[in-house]
Image 1 (cartoon, rainbow, N blue to C red):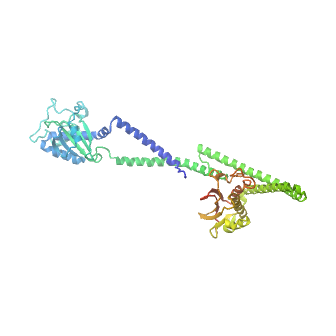
Image 2: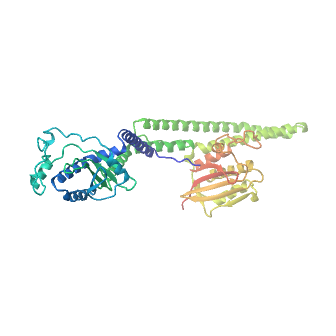
Image 3: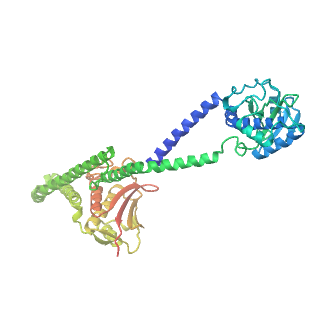
Length: 507
């Protein structure tokens, strides 16, 4: 299963906002445990309900009881709420009549602490209406001694008519309605029995009791976007450098040490890029030196091997019958050494100077059929599924040697009854050739190393069954010189599939 990768930029943003969410959750849990959810709501709505209670009490004190309903209805419409006056026993007095839930009735009967005294005289512009605590004089209509305009001004300034002290406010959530109930215990002197102001708000935000979270959410979304945009240049510069290094190291792992990583930053990422460039240069020199060394050795061995072959041939003709088996063994060993030297020369020459290879258009079908005929591959053991008229850009000699080594590898390791299937595919200007057999195949651990020089999947194989381990390495070198790649994977349902990719030859 292919591992899912998450970009570094996404990881940074996720961890940043996850940290913010954890901090907000801890803060909310602390406030909820210390204050309580109900108290939080009441605390936000308390200033508005205090002001509402003061205004309602002032107007109720200034008018007869017949006008109380109109006063509360007017204030309720202005604030999108329902106001009603109830006695502590639950008896309705005035306002919007609505059936009180059981929870609200129970809270009405509960005893509450006495009202706290208001600010001392002179603070906030407040003065008691009379020194002896008597109510201000009223006219025949039940109004105060001030006219409407003067009394409205005094209400704004906190003068006569302003209620004294703070009112206890309690919020009640019930299962009967989706809204919130508030109980405001007001000191109404015009009532003979204790009364409370019951406020019902279907929506706390519409009633203006708590802030509307919509603008806050939009603001939070804007902060998120601005944060992401602010982090984008920094994280993009960092991830771009890392992505370039990842591509360069992947090509190095495939054997291409030429590309250099561009270094633009003076930080640790830039230092890492310089180290990768130095590593690639050194590996390129090491691999080139190794191939040159192998090529020089193979070239130097050609002359003594040729002499040994001539001597072995002469000895085979002159040796007595009793020494014939030993002479035959000697001749076989010399031939094996000659074949190994030839493979070493082919391997070193294919990898030393790929820039000097002249690539031309090579027809795929005729080239593969010619290789199969040259290798004497039985016709009943291969199937060709090639696109007509397909041509690749490569060196014909190197490509023919690579295909020949793949075919010989199938004959040697897949078994005498294995069938070779060769399929061609064309994708985005790249020709893909699939050489699949139905032999025993190799394990997953061995697949990445099949193209390493001198590597043999079965260590117990001898020269007769396994060769020197240079066949597929030569395939890789030849295709790299032609600008192509090679890889291996498991065939279905069994066997090995060698995948060759080469650029398409344009007309």
